Image 1 (tube, rainbow, N blue to C red):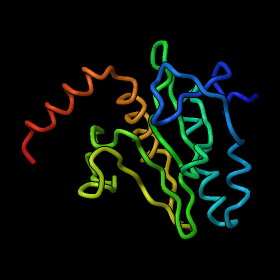
Image 2 (tube, one colour):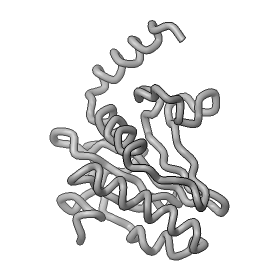
Image 3 (tube, rainbow, N blue to C red):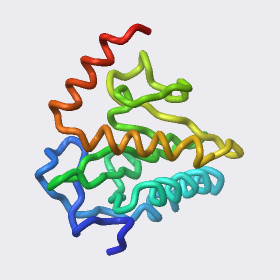
Length: 163
């Protein structure tokens, strides 16, 4: 298996505790093969950016959701931190714990829609700028790598901040 599709042969799955390992289901290319060419191109550009931004990231299709999920090594576990979700008219780059991320330019979508996740939406022709996106990808991986206690403290700290 390639580095981009597995990490130590096992990948954590959203909804399954981090200490329970599962094997890869289908390759990301198989998921994207069913997309329109323009959506596949957007998704591939995002995949390239995520894989280049986080060395050692694990990539795996979450077939129940129809998306490509990313896990980052966090001590002895893998932490789910991001996904690419191709749809018919756009592609989302999403962050599992986006509510806790620093987003000084208010680029992330999802506030008022979901409690935890945040995302960016890309359509064909939209810029995919590594200078803008790489810091968000790194921040998502950092947040996912925190312990539950550290995430709780961060959430409480954010609640206390004005605005």
